[in-house]
Image 1 (cartoon, rainbow, N blue to C red):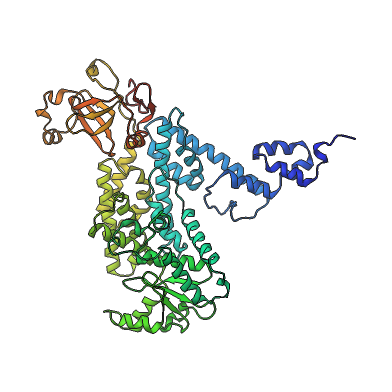
Image 2 (cartoon, helix red, strand yellow):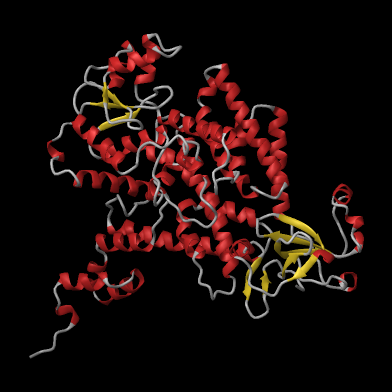
Length: 589
């Protein structure tokens, strides 16, 4: 009996063999014969390798997307080759970013602006660098910083597209708030929100054996009832002011408490209802927002805009409070009890579908109001929250600012506020990464000559500082009395806080005002002793006299370890010091 050779196998088995190979091995294997090449050129194979190789794809018109695009194999091959090339380019830029402090911000902007989500897989891999890597802390830290900027950039892009059109889907528009505030160590994606909504819709349908026999109103009531039974609607008066209730993804992904304020309750209800074939949208009802529900067939409420009337078959619900169906008359009766809503035109505007832009504006105002009138929720004190809200308000009010003086005044107020905040945080060494966002989206919106010139000057100063190399500070005769080195951790003798040394001066180089206010001259060794630049566990940067430093020979805390990557490569367990990544500035430490 003659032995079976590879090419004796049917095409189906050969195709199966290719499935167990990576794209590079498969391409080489396909060179064995015309038949193997033909099989290796199969559309499903190259689409699979694209899908398995990368989780994140920037949407581009000229390139297929493996999740929702059917294209010839040649295009999938090209898409695969393009992604390989892009990964190499992104990794090269990122490695350059780690190698020197010079042009770090410019390289971050290069990655975010020129590659966007095509860079995300590379960044996520760097975020999860193995513990034994030589520069593990630096890779994890800086990839997190770039990811954070990328998320904010993507959120602003989503809102920017909504200025002149009711786009994108509701969950994307509100999920952008969650995307914006993601910390520097997160690979969060809007797909998390979509999956939560998909799973919730599936659970509702699967739990009801008579689901397919229900009409649209019975389904709407069943959806509301199911969500209420699982504590997905409403919240108590005591917890109403919690900041996380304003962020839809944080509501849905919380392990225990999924309560939400009226805005988020209605949005979640409508997103789930739409997945289950019920035509439900948030409406503009004042106070507690409601949902408007249309029949599957018949006129839409949008079709009666000219007459300011609502079709008889359209109903409303307030899922935050109850599962009842509300008629048009019941809704108008409630509006009659409120000032300014007595005319057919004003009532119609309250009962019709709300533009997605209006819902984003409402969410931004809710966040700002919560910050002004309520104490911060634990873990939600970050300035990124207010920054996020202001950015949404500026983006959503831009188109309305041209329509009347009141909208224009609010728009300009929010613009002035975000520019003032940006300037203040830049002075403290924060938000420098977001210069790209301000340059691209805020600077063109400023009408005042003075304000525009001020922001342009700030951005120019940031870029100049980023492009200039830090002065080199070697160990020599002038600095031989500096006792401690970059990378050592210490405890402050007087105040007890712990930090790591990130720089030093042979004598106090602070301004005279700081020296007087800190009473440096009252120290036993005064201003002529060495002073050290410090990064503390609470993320603050400080300037500490040598006599107040007590070096520790113990492992750093988790907080300090997470921050250390900005200045250090890794933790040296044997010598109990951080290994410097700023040797272009302190070459001998």
